[in-house]
Image (tube, rainbow, N blue to C red; front, side, top):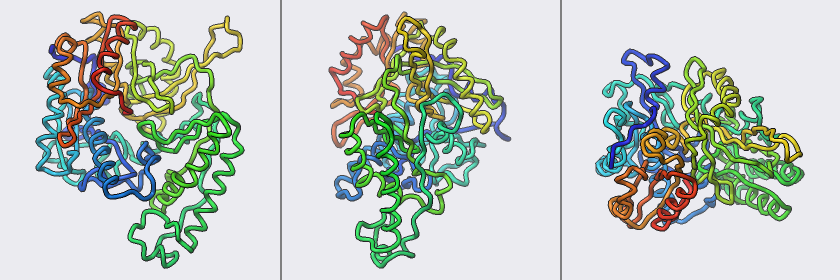
Amino acid sequence: MPQIKLDTTLKELYDQNGSYGPQGQIAMVLCAASSEIAPTSKLVRNSKYLYQDSTFGSTSLHISSEEHEKLRRAVAIKYLSLVPQHDAFAAGNMSVILFDPHGSAKHTARGKKEADNTMRTLVEEQRPNMLFFAGPGEISMVANGIDLLIAKMELDELEGFPLAIDPDTHYFLNTKAALCASGLPSPQSVLVELDSFSANAQDCCSTCISAEEKRYIPENCTGVRRRWLSDQIDRILAQVSVYPIPFVLKNQQTFGGGGIFVVSSSEELSKLKATLSIQILPKLLSEVNASNAYLKPATLILSEMITDPISDWGLTFFVTKSGKCIFLAVTEQIVDPTKAWIGSKISYLAQGDLEKKFTPVMQDIGAWLHAYGYYGPCGADILETRATSKPEESLTTMQIVDLNIRTSGSLVLGLLKGHFSVRRDLHEASSFSITATMTREAFVEKLANEHEEGRMVIVSWFEDLEFGLSYGNVVVGAPDAEALEKEVAKIKGLASEIRF
């Protein structure tokens, strides 16, 4: 296929900030963080910087070793290969750090081959310098001429490394509570916070002291920890029970569509309360301790539901060190029935008008981030609603429902305008994730024309040889919206869509 030239890259955007140190080199750590499970033996589970992704919310407290391995494998593939490849595709000629999803030097060659196959479609001058390590403890800064690291998400094991953005600040900026307190236009919300944290296991009963697994408060605990947990759960459920329906409940730190619950009826409220009391809160509250309580990782956010949005937008931009905001794109969000993001679509010819429309809210977000010293990529999920009850009036308002102060899922889509729209008259495009029972080579062969003509771009891919499955993220372009639907349907005929 023809090589792809992006309109700009993260390298070019970061270069506007000036030098970063004696060698002037930064490197991006692009893997996602998991608080549910250690993806490999070389990358620990996050226990300080807690994230409530879909695995955290859907996994029960007690799972079999077989279920544990299945979950670990899925998290490793997604967080250490698919997500980093997707972001590395937009990085440009800069260093990016990837961790091998198998956690061993033996398999690093395979992980490198997967990523190399994805990046070789880029023009040479925009290909990232990919550095592979088994885990954070093996990152060699000096040997690779790196001055600073930029982390997509906070990893516990990166503490002690020179980071461009203070990890506590970066973690805070990505919390739902931060958005609520920011003064930016967002739905009315109430914060449900803990007023304390649990005692240590060794200061509780004999059950806690002798328990092999210290992570959770045991169900048969007879001491202060169980009483504390029960009191906190009762207090939280009481606040949830009286919040006006319909509403949305969010965990403090969500990722990949997890940690969001939509309640539209009393039946859904009952179901949510059961899920909170039996599964989510015993796990989440047990994770709060002296090392992370100040981050308020267990705060829950109750928000009014916007029931009649006109559009669901995804704004992507970059904030420089000086506070300048650089518009990248506005995309339409594709969500599943649970409101989890599964993809995006973009109209390139509309970007000029959309930039004008979203510049005020972009600058407001950028000014808020700049006040905290943040610079880098940003994503904002925005619902557009009518400002008046009169249908004949066209006035609308913007409500920010989520901020992703990091590389976002729609980042690459906005950088392909030249590739699709300018050079190929493909003015509509969509990105989504797939799973397929075939190799990358077989998938490309079935879509040979689309691939060779540059109408389809693979931005991440991983082949699970043991199970005969492939997972990937693709972008497909078409002349208009109708043609795009047909192109997407053709690809979906080869693979089913997955949550990414």
